[in-house]
Length: 347
Image 1 (cartoon, rainbow, N blue to C red):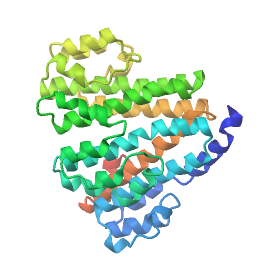
Image 2 (tube, rainbow, N blue to C red):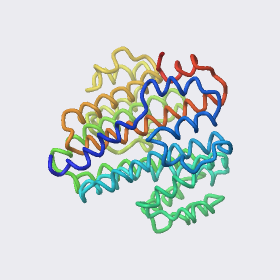
Image 3 (cartoon, rainbow, N blue to C red):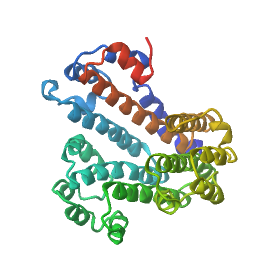
């Protein structure tokens, strides 16, 4: 394992050194405009490449967000270049999540929520197309749902979208859920073909926990805010069980109210994590915190494994999410103190 991961682990260590520091975030929080943010990031090695030809005076917020997303896939491509064949197989299934993010943006355009489309930068599609078999040129031309479906013909995403034709008037939410569920189940299924038994355990711990927590959050939301019947909620869940047994999911689904939902959860293997949780916001915070701890503990325990690849991509994605929040706050003139509070960093 050490020999297999020496090259890519060395590369990851170097890339980690290019991630932004706490001091960087504080300095950015004091900036006053998108132009200043672009100028600042141009001097940072993690963003210099994707921003080098950008005229900062012509950059608007959603365009910058698209460029920031491009930097994630730029790093993905760097890792792919250093990866051996087995590691590339892992990166290919990990990359499904990037494809689905983009597909959901095109999907919103097909539902005539056209402003979302601006977030997909040309640069991001260029990076993504290096390892994707999707026809982005056809997708860019879509303006309605039928054209969107046709652009997916021949891809693995066509069938899950096609299946929704059996539902009367499926909504945007239905289509997005179908794409997410397909991606999650595909990633889970493919792991056994490409990973060693030891790596499968790491993979299952991270993704299994992720899917369990997402299903718990989904059930909570659907019960509290939409009051959907159990059968309908069940059809929207990720069909993967890790530490949350099918019987426990069934009991969560059939809980009469939110109080009953919490009581059921207290008898699962996630009981110790939810003892002080009282609402959905805290539940979502638990999702972020627990996954963060699990990802980094695995990477620390076994640095010469897929855990190190997963941890780096997670950290880069988190960084871009933080930067996107910063850019939005600066755009609306929130001020340094408020911005630092929003992103959870203090001077």
